[in-house]
Amino acid sequence: MRIMSRPKQRAVIARELMMVSRAAHMLQRTGLAMAGAMAGTFVAAQLAKGHVVLFGTLAFIVTTIVIGAAGFYLGIDIPRPALRATGRIDAVELMSAGGIFLAALAALVSVYGIIFDEIPPRAWEFVIGSWWFGGVLMLATAGLVGRQRLTQKVAPISAGPIRDQRLRR
Image (cartoon, rainbow, N blue to C red; front, side, top):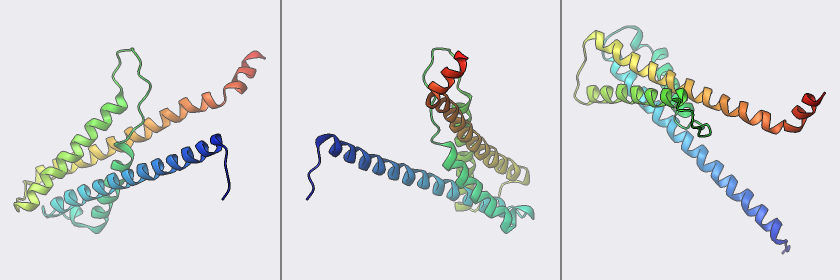
């Protein structure tokens, strides 16, 4: 048995805790992706019942499921910017909230239609599909923009001394 100093023990424990935290976060993201895929499946099933040729194709159903998984994976857990007293609304947060609402509403209406064997009028089929795709697109866009914003803030911090030397010249 090897004896480690206290700082090394703390570093090992911190590294192990970080690995567990990352694994838990990945598990959470995977669960959200599965929820998005499940909601996409319900929306695709409901739209396919409307006898619109495009909605009944395997390509459409697979696309709906994949887009749902990607949108929910990317868009629900967006990094928050540092709080500022600017009084401005964060567009990324608003897009994420609106996107999850629209996608969940489309999934809820679809599940209702499937369970109670209701087929909405054709115009409503397109409305439900628009809610779904619009919501998931908003989610994915918000997630990508939020992550890009975070990356842009981290890059100047990590390149701090080099940037300062360039400014001195």
